[in-house]
Length: 313
Image (cartoon, rainbow, N blue to C red):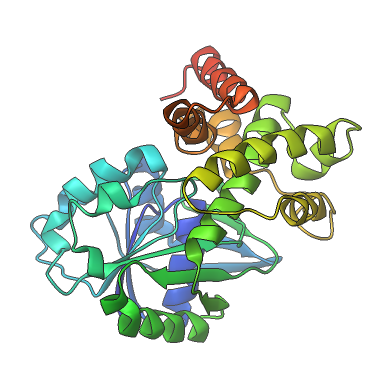
């Protein structure tokens, strides 16, 4: 399958590398000039569960694709949420009426952006529980195991969705075809809405946060805000199960030693975060439905203040 990874950061590099290793025709698309230059000169260098792997994968800036006449079967959207619209506006030249998009972004509401560029029947949505770390231009750390859950947005997309599952299975990405991916997206948003912002503000990894006596109470309060808003959109979150799922991540043998992507963006690289599409989205939706979400509002404001202090761009 001809696959473009739109957003070749930590997670985009992981998924692109694993699809490349299984024999797919993969290209990476990114806007970070140093990252592009490093991958072109040295290949994508990955610490893959303790083993160094170097892969020569073509990488382009969106502007370079305009003249390339490249067309792809599948675009895997892995930009930051605040970069999705700009990315798809810039790569319209590689999109045809047969191109499908699999959106694996954190957060909520991305279908509103993607429907401007591809037919709704060509959109797949999913979540990934893989982890990845960006160590610098062209270098990533890929530890542990994970899975991807996906579903077509419209019934017409089911055949292609199953083909994506087959291709991803061959790449050992552990895909699962879902019949209720909207529930899973909200459940994953609870994980991001707790661990991402809190680890970023507290400057710690997941295990470090979980060691704190107040951790469970904070998590349960934020999850309750997510659940109250989700219920207004027809999603009934199992709060005790979600809380237990988040608590299980504290274990260093699970992903406890991982620093969430928001931490990597802001603390390590001084890049703007996705907070407006996670806690900020719940805050906005809460205002729409007349629901108070004070923890989500405060955490969104704290992260924005941290962005300002660090001069994030």
